[in-house]
Length: 499
Image 1: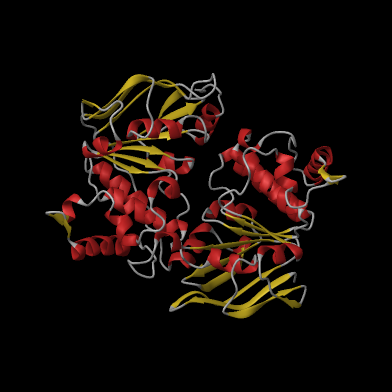
Image 2: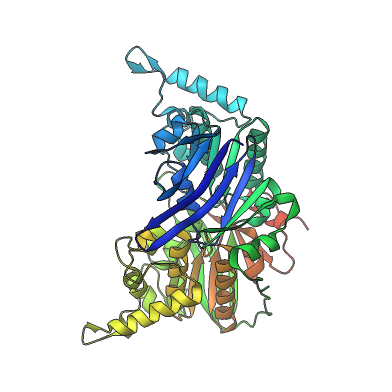
């Protein structure tokens, strides 16, 4: 056994994040760690990577007790971690990002040629070739993920922790990453894989450990289990299979005609975008990240000015209107980046929940504190948001629980139109079930929803119509009943629809 975490407990005051956790890792093994949001997965791995100290318990590496005061200590012991949010410098080259902190020198200066040569060498050695001279800002998210892994391999890591590694990747990039992980494991590298995507885990993992409420509910060989059994261990019950009723469309709620936005360079960001979303339907937008989806969302919601075209909401022209004005006319918005657009990290759970709801909870400028707390408490219960209290600052919630708070807040606006951008990013299967159910409920109650998701299974499951974006244009429209992942993937990559 290469690594063992023995009876790890981590407490923060009265809150116990991990309780007597047993976790082990063999050389050349891929061991998946799964659980609901707030189950203690990330805390456990932060302990292993030296970002936290356990309250009790010990870590054994090759049978010897070790302790890490910092990530630098963990790296010295050949343990590396690739975080959910990439930690790369966009203006640096791939080689510069990989060697940073351990730069080859020439005299007293940085030897860029040696860095590039070393980057090419390890890329070929581990079957993950890269262009060392390319700037990270010009790389796809899949390539950035590859750079992060090569960075920890360059540091000499034998144990690699991957935190939600496929969260922002396209289906093709996911397949390439899983192949790379398997190849590295075959070469003797050991992986701890934190993921909510159970089908991917079943494809790549050797063993799976499930956490619930900070405790291990089971460790099983992947070949002896399935996604349904793992879901049951995670949430403590059988999941409900949600069915989608036939759409009952009404009047047009959102109308976009000829929308164009010039880019900073010569290439336009959006070109002649036209679409509509009707009452009682979910229109899904699929596309590889960076093909104009973000700019489209920002234009519709008032966060970005347009150069040409018209945006109408419930028949009213809102082109160029302010964010506040558009929201007042009937828009709610689950943003794609919860940290940048969705919350104030230093504000409490209650304060973040209040955003957009102040008018209904104030009289003569005085807020109704008990009414606000009651509203947010109901969301916490209904969506299973794990928080120490309503006074907890948002920055101390796990990413998945923060996502659930934002979804609950925006759905509670009860607006005729909702933009749902990556609504289930980083949430567990139980929360995904709840969010999907709530979106379909809104649609069945005559709400209009524009769904933007990097998860094709989510697009296919929820959408009535599917639009595909490529290089700032809508390159195809498919009926969700007959669309396939293969058709959508082909259009996403710039191909032509077949059949």
